[in-house]
Length: 82
Image (cartoon, helix red, strand yellow):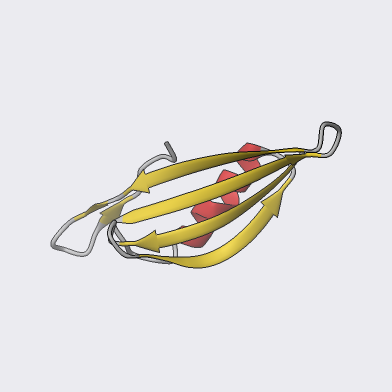
């Protein structure tokens, strides 16, 4: 199964796509998305995934969100993908 994901980042209301990534497993795709999103200092990150199964010729769609905490001193604490 191949996983293709589109990574979005923004303030929760306006999300802009920043990358399209592929990976062989779901944890690998989440790790790639985290590395990309860590370069942006936004409150919300979203990962939309399309998984294609070649044997049954079906597609599965997933969406993960990550809400980060921002502080007045420009510190940001990253959350987990949920």
